[in-house]
Image (cartoon, rainbow, N blue to C red; front, side, top):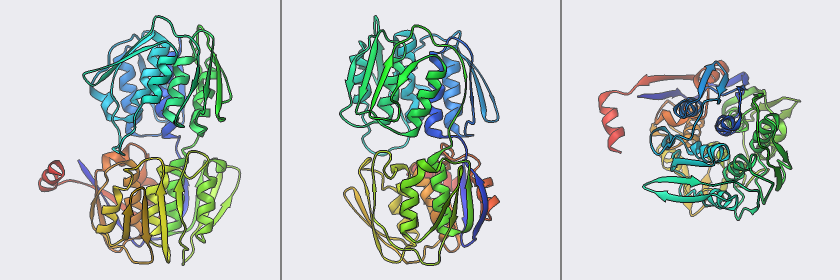
Length: 428
């Protein structure tokens, strides 16, 4: 196991190129199960979640070929093999295997998903959708058993706006008999990306990106080639990193429209933000202003950027309030920031950040993916060296992190954990 070390105080300057969207990739790979011939996905991020999902496709009889940022999937010989344990528990997005396998085989057995521990994230809306389409769903010994004689289109209203449930119901419905209507659907760009892939495979989907999605079921879906959209969360993280320590940073290969909520908050903080067709330019200022941030479903401020943004707000001159309306347990990074000297108080779903103080390098631990990103932001701003353990979480969502930051001028490297550090990590 490794730790990430960052020597703070170095200014960032230059260009960073954003990889394909993690939150699209983890849905697009399972979606390939629905095809009857070869599916090629380009612009994949080099992250551990991609490898895990490719392995799961191999487990159910598929053949995969991963070459740089391209994954070729051969689904012709796939079958509905139960996946109650193992790697399905390593990532939250393994639940997309449910919708895809149910849509293809009318049955699936999938272990309850893992991923980052952000508090309760029930999948009741997913199950509600599957049952509306005609599936029987039971929970037996930590695995979900899904079975349907035939899937039939239905009108499904989501009680809570959910990206995962919207995509999962889409995957199950594209081969169902008749029309499915998903109301109160999520609008995230990743949903449009999945719908684009499915449409290229022959599916009939209208309204992706709005709150009502209509799907006419098809008997067969064929292979296709698809390129993933840029990762708006990775892009947002580098925008925040540039605001924290940048002189002039170009964040390249982005869709600026996907990042408007962050761009507006950075401008409010006195950060220079310029936009072109496929790039965003960040120029940080000496004095940053405090702002209040409230996470909301898209197009609101993303919950996935709340943690890095909290780190940036420790640099602002004054008090800021960060409220997360999506996940109530997404403040686990706060204790680690306090170790570095941050003045932050958590009350319920909100954190009061008293900015303006200086952070000090310390030994900290990433509890989840975006908490890891927050500690990287803090490490770049801190005096001295910051040591981050729990790097496996960061590797789930940020491709070539060290190379990209070194290219901007950061002093960042990895070291293996010594035996004592390994014992501390396992006992904590």
